[in-house]
Length: 163
Length: 198
Image (cartoon, rainbow over the protein chains, first blue to last red):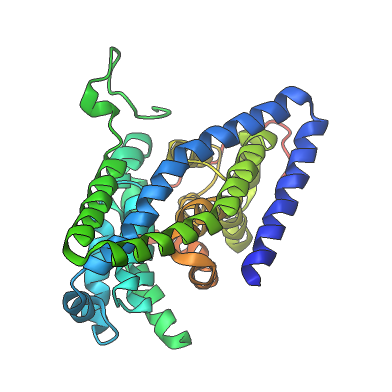
């Protein structure tokens, strides 16, 4: 139900933006469509491989290990491990999300997966090396990393609190 | 300031530079584990897992497509200068909130976001606002969530994580404003705008 509502909302936003672009002229509208199509075609194989893979991966992940390291009783050690894993995960979004989803299916605790996704979002070394360091001053990156370090723990703690 | 650090120098890119390593890792993991399950557990279970994931994939596709459309139109309709003006202007807590909100709504890739943050700093935003902007894009970027995170985790997980993470860019911006960080990332003098508004 909520998913259907959400899709309808997205459709409404896309239609509104499309109308705005159309009013600004046909070339802009066409460029929007072309950009969207090329991004979609870029995403399609990645999502397909990632999603199909995470199902099989979840089946193969050693359940005992996942439970021991990231399970409901893994506590702060689990959060720390999830944070380190998030920081070290290589590759773009497909890798991070596919691994996180596989771990969740294989029995990892919800809070630890939230910590993993938070750590991956804020701190992954891969993104820092390829995108952040070439384009931003080191001082700003250092400040960003220092203030972000506690965030995965805060996210996991809040999740446990709310649940 | 490099716009997009792709090929390090001019000249044809070598074959190993053209490979998307993220995709290669996922492909090896995916096909490897699919093959292993097929051999080890037999075709029945293999087909069952495949059908579950294929259904998930199919059900998420409309949202991914709409996410791409929204992203493309927003990028075309909103000029980069508009964003610079809004974030550069804000100060105090509202400044952080605006920076966070724009980071959350603006659909762009890493090749745009980080250089844009540097431009924001140069045009008068403080390091708190710049970090709130980047963090919001990283943590609660709506476009990213729709086209990348939802396909893997589903709507409930993403909505929960979003509600939880929404205040975090502002918190990070506040922490980044702490005077101890002044040495690491000094505040630039505000550029004087002749006859400019507040």
